[in-house]
Image 1 (tube, rainbow, N blue to C red):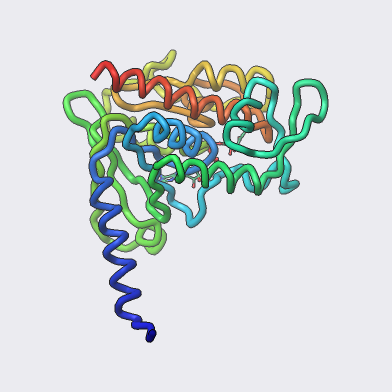
Image 2 (cartoon, rainbow, N blue to C red):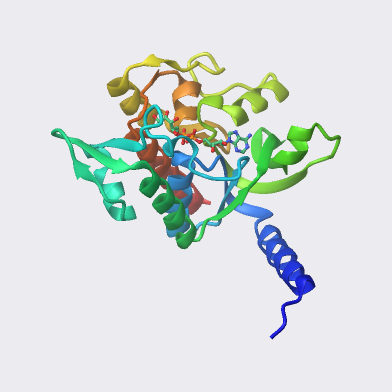
Length: 261
Ligand code: 48F
């Protein structure tokens, strides 16, 4: 059997377009395919919700690949151990209540489980704005990362979503864009704005990040380090339980909200 380059090209273009068209309208659009975004997508897909992740880099996984200071091991505390088990990530007990896992196995397994559950991931796409209708988030404005990097003057496209989760990590990107472009809108935070991430304090940061995982504006949710930075608590470094629990909490809360219609 001969191989035809044009069939190969047509297969890629058609299959991608099918996938892209099928994800123009979503229950949940997740911005950022890092730790919290992948967990949120995994859980939402398991619950049968139509969710997609938009990731600006070539690879998903965010800050998990590099463990702590490029030592590719992560630490997860007791409270989140059940997620490692459910995902099938091998972990080893270290001290009482602390577990370690290989950062590469954790990242690849999490991404694989999320996809197998049914979430679609669109990489190389930069979320550059949101759509707002009648004081509610209505979706995302997206553009190829490469266009953005090259500084080309090209207009973006849009995704409609009932809910958007900002999982962009330390950058708090969607929240920043939303505030910049929608004044006098304010967030459900103490000041109505971004409270800011504070210096390292793992114990408090981990607990508060999960507590702060919430809807900060109608249809706009924060999870992971974006919850840390938006509602203002301490960073926690290379312990990942809080990030995972935060993604799971966002998924559960949105699923409940979708049930109410
Ligand atoms: O950084 P990241 O993994 O965020 P997270 O889920 O987890 C944080 C931990 O990795 C670590 C930590 C744990 O204690 O502190 O840092 O909060 O993933 C964020 C992802 O969002 C992507 C970015 O490339 C990364 O993969 N991202 C950021 N801005 C955009 C974006 C954007 N505008 N559009 C699309 N993707």
